[in-house]
Length: 126
Image 1 (tube, rainbow, N blue to C red):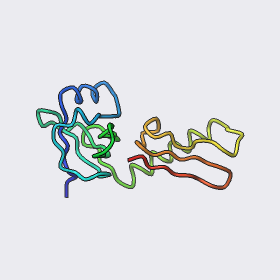
Image 2 (cartoon, helix red, strand yellow):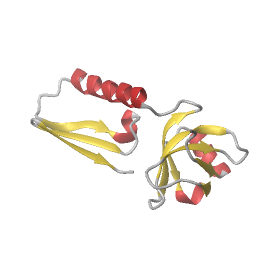
Image 3 (cartoon, one colour):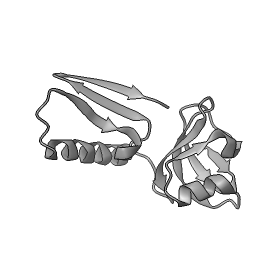
């Protein structure tokens, strides 16, 4: 079954084409999705632009996680989380408290993971 569709304005489409990971509520033309849903994002002419996490309450209505027809799935999220972990390990951080995942910067929109010693704190902002 296909994900629900959200159609955005030409201004929102321009933001995506410029690489911005967020679409604001003011640029949502039509949405048939519930809060927290993974949605397909289309432009004003119906072209598929990518996939995003949808919020019906936030000013940031869409947090893009893919472009074109790349879909979310366990493999996508696992690969991006692994990339984030490898990057942080490569920094040689000599600390027991640090941010492991930086949301959009790690292409994991709305996800923040902090490490405090043996504990990890996860925040999902969508």
